[in-house]
Length: 344
Image (cartoon, rainbow, N blue to C red; front, top):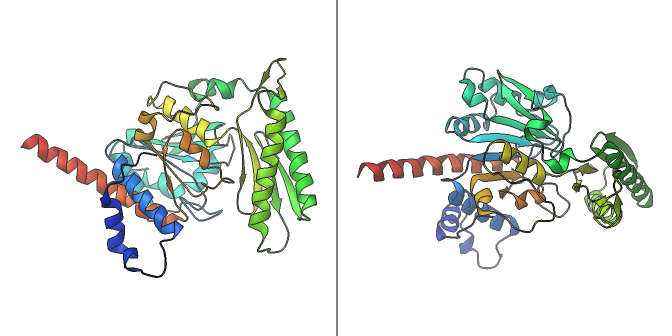
């Protein structure tokens, strides 16, 4: 998190929401989140080169798409025209680029009449870190694994992934039965999950959080460096994440930290691969990459992105639009200030 906390962010937010005038009601978590988001935008505007976004509840409404005419389309295109790369980084995993084209239809349509070099600044990282697509001629084209995949990911063997997902599936099903939840199991090449199929339940988010935490503990016990016996005969670990998706809980092989770092390397922004246990957050990464998402709680899959990027925590696409527009204005302001300085 790149945050020189000057008064500018608070004063700007205060001009829109004068929270300091309240004498009986304290500032809320969401108001603090807005101030920190704005401080992040101001701090990173001059250096940001890659903007990555979660999908649901960030770029578009839950289980929706970015439609033609969506107000987010124009500022995203403007950022790409200014030389920034834009990426959807999502848990949705598929080797079929058309699935992501449907989700980004409004943006892809807007890029049809732009130069190829602008279109080429749009990317999709799918399955957390398992698929990469780039925009070519208005379509999303898969990038060969050898061109971008982290060796950590490339070294995972299918038998190890199967053993991992088998245990994830068994644990998810057991926990759903323990909590008397109606559910349907889902299995994908790099993920296992449960989808709630029961009637509306006000306590459901709490149970799904608990399931995400308990399955995470179970997998860490069995698949930690000391516990996982790889098919090679060595002990090691698989990077993974567990998260509450709102009406489901999924366990994914990999994480957004691995996916964003792999994209950073592919774009030439860093020359490091991701090490899951690393504690260091490198200044160049947080200075040139901004990840925007809505799942930064302990049960969310955006949380690990903080290992490799600066972040904005939003709750809906309207907030994303506000901060993207604010970032664009800040970039223009600093560009004009620099031009004036050079002319003086």
